Image (cartoon, rainbow, N blue to C red):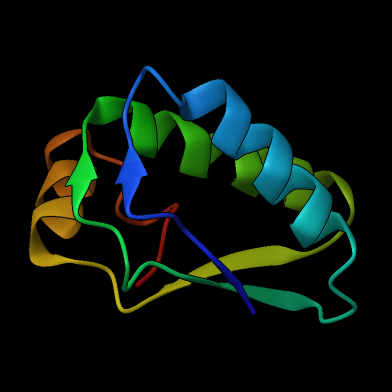
Length: 88
């Protein structure tokens, strides 16, 4: 299981996306789980990163599942209308 970092804002989104893209590409499971428990500081860039990771996984025939998502992240995902795309 890969994990989100403590911080995922626009200042680190590109770096985090690169790291997670590599980590998730190596996951053998069909349903890839991303642990969001450590995530404390984030903005809308977090949603963009998650959607891009989902897109990359779908291209490989895999799905993305978020585990331990903070309430604020769930609210942000719902606000943007993509909750059905990023199940928690």
